[in-house]
Length: 414
Image (cartoon, rainbow, N blue to C red):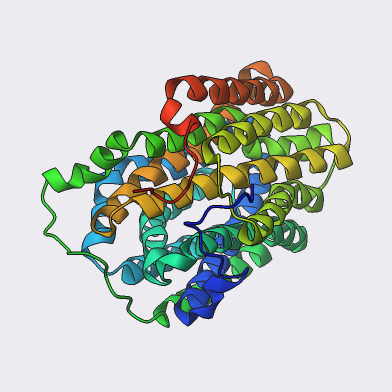
């Protein structure tokens, strides 16, 4: 992964952190994601404990995905037209309101998962605006020479939170659901303060008036750039089919016989693998044959998912999940670097909004797919079939998107 490419400027493993605005951004994203992970592991356990229906685990993903889909044309335009820092802060504020609502419902006592679904839909709206704004903001906080490094560390912010958040959520939920949600609300408040302290960044490029036609600029750009289209399509269908996160509460309770703390370990395992891979990529960026590397690691993602699905041993399941996270991190790194460096700043928000729909479809809609299949064919078959499907997607994309397969460099050449 580290063969020489003269276009890549080596700035050191921590080059992005030389810029104070990025440090605040990184920390704010970490706190916000940490809080969301606590909420995710807590509501998963709480809802499954209440209904014992895997379909409800799928609904958790669906209600968070629908806002991404319905608001895709609005969120990207807002990120491009208004201050991205302001939009990011407003999204965190809405997440804070929703986390506080779930805390209130838990204090009052839950007889039905419906109030949680409503609050999670609100968090889905917040994430719909948070994603394009935060992903578009990061490129304005560091010079281009440090951007690949910033992408790796920006992804690691999410992954570190994905390690600590689920374990912390499991431990906190063991104390009580109200404790878990109160801590999540506190972290979101801290993230909001940090966003407010990010200096207003310069905007690269002209800010144009938003028209109805311009709302579709993100879709037009992605359709034109076949390498970018191939990368995000690959991630969409691989994770849509291979995602198993939604079913972890069922695995923890019914297959591996673990409690909330064990569920936290399962949720944290992909993050552990991913952060190790992110640290490696920050020090040794992918410099050549990026497309082939991406396809190989997506196929590995599917194979490790099959291994996890078949495992009935806790340590083997945790190890398989860690390998899933490491393989997925390579996909995240390649896709995000391509997307940000190849996209003009004036349409970056709209492009990222489309990308967020792809990500939401792969993650939240993938959770619904997993829950729906598990309700009809069983938990283990749903995961194993999905992993096989992810391998097939990698093979198919190698044929359908030869531009992606043959792409060598993450930076645009010429």
